[in-house]
Length: 242
Image (cartoon, rainbow, N blue to C red; front, side, top):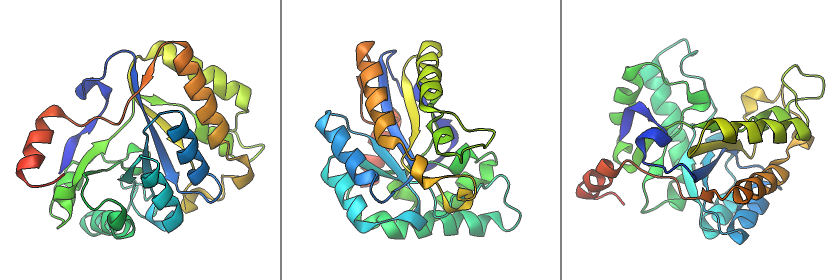
């Protein structure tokens, strides 16, 4: 079911030293499979919120094989708050088109959903989504507690939002100081509608993941699988989902 309120650490019972790693906007050729393998080797189960337009069967197979979870991040990363048109039809198109790409890789499990950019301000969006035949397979919408700002690494050189790896590291360490526990927003790709902003050669997802894991462990933090609201686990079980 699609909830009106965004799910974050504070309503998912995360402890102060517990974090879940989530990766948006992939999969990306030459990145996502290696990232899934790296995290598995480090004993971390992450969630990959994928875009339907970028789906690659081999990459999704690898993500699942290495023990990670797949999430729906819509088909084309349409910002629904900025969309001008029939929102009911667009919500249905974005969720369903992505679902059709990932459903065979998640035959039994519940599927987390995250809106692009967290843009889901109209309560009607959840109502529209819950009218879909696939709605009972879903739980969300998920937000995040810490934006790692790794997406800035992928901006083209000279872009105003561009940062280098050193600045990313400093920003991330500062973020850990300011917010304890919850969901980390990271990226293993970029959407097609941001291709004019991004440089594929600047994808540093593997280096980012390595730094994040090293930094968190040095502080005694734990990486845990993405949590679900306790009350919903029983409710969805009664619906026969998961």
